[in-house]
Length: 569
Ligand code: ATP
Ligand code: MG
Image 1 (cartoon, helix red, strand yellow):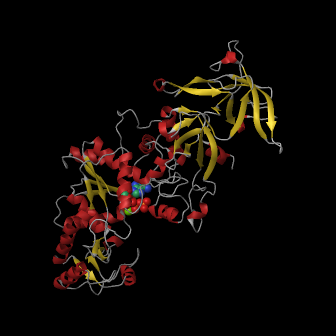
Image 2 (tube, helix red, strand yellow):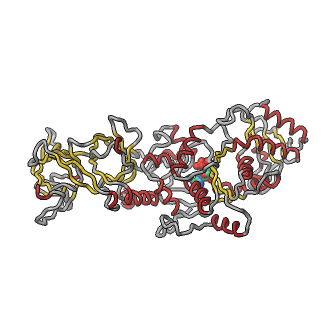
Image 3 (cartoon, helix red, strand yellow):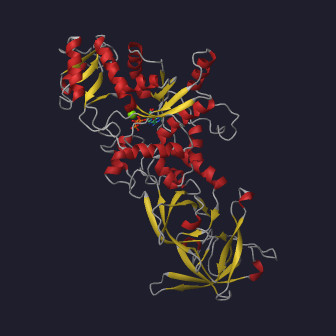
């Protein structure tokens, strides 16, 4: 997975035909008349929430189906009841829909095929191609051999068809404890490919299944379920990540030796890796279970639900994935590319609002008390059709604490004693006084305004060096704002560490309280992800309640992280 030529993204145009080795194979297959149409599938195991890597697989499988006028199935690979839950099934469907893909009628579960898979297992036994093995897990491992040495045949390998059938049926009936026996395909213990050394195809698991309940005591392995499920669904191109390449001979062997209804083919591509990010369900489960994050949809998580909660639009995620090459080269994509896609989309589409995160009170001394007026603010300078909105202005305002300095250095152009600045969309104001508390901390700024500068321009043409955002104090809506940074502070989390969690960034979340938002914001009129002018992009969090608004920062306006990195900070 390498970064594609980002100068020519595949987005928007629709005209640019996507091209990669998989699409080339499909075009050739269709041209040669090998298939009437294309059928792909996205096959998640419902044992966790989907992450950005899965998003790539979703965009690939559903995208190909759309481009070639075929269809893409959503198939839950639910063969391990110990780890699978309905919560995950629901979350996966929500996430695929959110990415704007539709499986239509084609929602399937590998568990729907358990009766057929069982019949095929008996078919193998009857043809002398599978046997029940009583070796313990440790013994099986020892018999399996290594990459350089062949395996040894199990003493149970020569069991008769009758004995195998009897034992397998009793496994199915629940007569044996977990792990007592397995069913193995009889292939070749000397094969150079360890997956072909009599792989396990059924194991005993006396566990209730979310969909089939207590009906089964044995469950097929991934290898036995996957290809056969593809075949049942008439999948033409079964796309998976490279770690399954060594399983392909087994996939093909099973399709060849079973009376399956169609001959699917498996193709492998490199999985997506992203800097500063872990993309492995095992790690993500650990983050959730050890409470390093607040759940699967914590906005710091690289899950689809986490990105959604952080305010990332699905279009931005799809754009990011569209810019990646699909190939066989394992590599890591820089997270800055994802950030850039998010900023690019939001810059074009997010409405602008004014909010003050770290408020400092300003009193306009010559503005009448009890007066308020509305000024007109541009909703999106990138989009004229977004129009304008009215924002209240009054005698008491908040500005950003950072935007004032009592004793400014040379390059500080914002507000300072005696200095005039523009309050965006409103007036020019000049600082006349600074009020401090008994500890010498600034608690209020006094200003005067020039009524002639309404709208933010002086009729005499005089200029100011700074334009600042502000919020009218009596009209302000209060909110907590959660700022996020990278969850891991190392480019390759866990590299050279005993535990990947050692690389967690202790400052990945900062919560600011009593932030002041303009009154067009709030749960009642939520415009989704917005730009707080000069600050970044923000979205309301579902933790918001009637008396406490909570916002998440989706992303800052600029890439401050790369700058820090360059400085070695
Ligand atoms: P993980 O390795 O993160 O635990 P998984 O591969 O076990 O994920 P599945 O539910 O089996 O998770 O994955 C469903 C599909 O998504 C598979 O076809 C898998 O190849 C693909 N997939 C998973 N992770 C990635 C990734 N990082 N990049 C691309 N595709 C991925
Ligand atoms: Mg998997």
